[in-house]
Image (cartoon, rainbow, N blue to C red):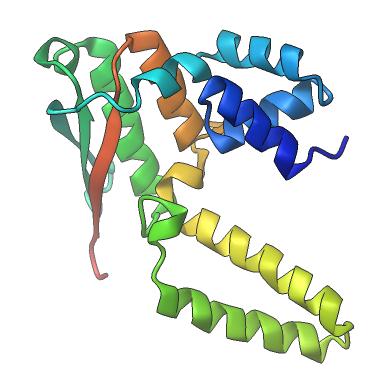
Length: 197
């Protein structure tokens, strides 16, 4: 089923849910807004959206060193209270994020953080490839737009499929944890080190 941008926007306005959460819920509900709202409530996305404006001033810096000692990651994840910062589930989440960064090597936190010069360079390459394939101009533009979207999503931590469960993105995992733990959580920043890089 084809879900329109208007349906997604309407659902977001009604629930405060994230764009991808609303789209996924609408697809699962085959366009039925009421069923999509129910799906969002079950997944905890609405609960997470309500907590998004709350200040995160506590948290931890987690680390992961790969078994061969050649890759290391530091990640800063924030929460609202020191009580949650000491919570086992929160600490496991931080560790999972650090493990994911070690495995998937994202360069940016969010897709909108991807450097504009890097996007322009990739766009130029994709456009040359599309033209070389002999595609009509309007089709070539759509192909390039799709490849740019994929490129920015692959470069951004929050958009990447979670290494331990590729059926959900890091952003969706974060939403689940916010709903389960009951506080706003924020992946603030990360740094990945690799020998020779």
